[in-house]
Image (cartoon, rainbow, N blue to C red; front, top):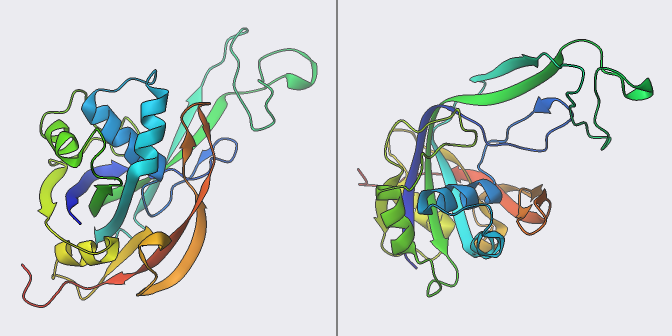
Length: 238
């Protein structure tokens, strides 16, 4: 199978997890919905193309490898907003809070905390299954070379510092094998994540993650099994 080789390099990136009230947490890997949005944004799709987004998400198979894992190199952005009398803020209770009005009264500044990875250097392998549907991998590659809109790595403030599309892995049986082909040999091994459906060989942890989006309703939901492990570059690789 043929795989796209993508590289996510950015001073800041945000691989969002489940937001808890005002705290925007991050994971160590991009979500299925984020990769869907990245491809769709490069191709110039709008949010009105809900069916197209949903189908694209179903077709994406990808794995990621940290070329340089930042470890504890994260930062938290503290944000506030001054609410006027008629402004409202959403909460996980499903009720908006404002400046006045009984139990829903909100006192003080509206606060948010947003986590970010710093100095992100990550490699991605990606294919579309089935491969003969539209858009095809070649369509996505062309879109990355000349994206319809500005691309970002998680949040709009996270701009990539280098081109995302890096070429191809001509043939690899699964995501882990494709990641091994592009793994830098500067380190003995690299932290990697790939779908359980691609095989569990080399994984030391397999877990459920909720990182999909229902593009028809606009809500996040849906779980998949993800493997975590370390991958070494093949001997003699560049």
